[in-house]
Image (cartoon, rainbow, N blue to C red):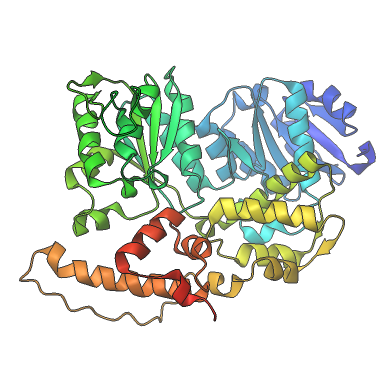
Length: 472
């Protein structure tokens, strides 16, 4: 990059002038927002950076909006030495392109240059909406440009210091573990963050894994084991895919939440434990409670603070920005250049429903950058690399879709009345997913928005055989 590429205006952020020039970008300092708004020489200006010295005495959101109105083609970046979720959220809503929360001028300058470089990646980002001219902003490892997500981050920070259990809901790939880690990081707890996927542990071993066992408790128990709850002492334990936990472990877990103590398998006494419990699931626990596969009292113990991660298709403003963020990471990691993309490519990227959410987009981006280095990619590239796009785009039902009425016997208790109906609908849905993916369980699970383990468990319960859906 050279200074001829454009100029950065610094308002209350003069410390960035030197670092930006070292990075071969021109920079000019202004004393106030008023002098910025009265400036008429904006043709070569690429970005405006506002620092703490200006923000302290201004209504931040209103100031950003004024600058955006005066210079609609110039990106606004906020540099603040204080890390505040509320500040980031308010700035993004007002139209800032990025919020840099760092005390280092060199680090902030690199963030500004990232904004400038990403302008080349997003030739028509305005199609995504008023807040779309932005690069990714990061919260504890989670990248998002969606005000809805920053509202969620704000809630996570506010509840982090409490000891109440948290239930995180969201489809596969939305970042439930990242959010749980963020809560732990902001909790101030000195202990470990321990994550366990309840769907990946055999039912016969789950009690021992979580609560420990004493020597000789069962065949093969040659030593005493503390268990993951004790391992997370003074920290946080995340129980992912909590809907998969068997009935025996549900009872023990309820005792832990009620009494703050665990009894190892084969043990005679309970041992006190102090750890924050965060549960997560991509399943509908209310449905499991209705069907009798999940304890109602445990559900209410877990569902104290509920956080719901929206799927990627419901926050389209994040798709291109996450793509740009991941593409830059991959290019730097493997020392390759990012492929050139067209507007048609970006349109196809946004129109895809991303059933695997952020995880799927990250995997797609890595594969794209590594296989299309130095090439120019159009809309056909997305369709070639995402073979089920036509079905995925149709994820949102049309308003004219016909909904069949289900006859229910109100003389029966609710669980008995709706249980068979729910099972029938679940069977038909999973049969359709398996049929469309020709029995490929991983793809079917991704499409259904559940884990592979959950799908296999449901297939076993419903008597579905993946081989019957494959071509002969």
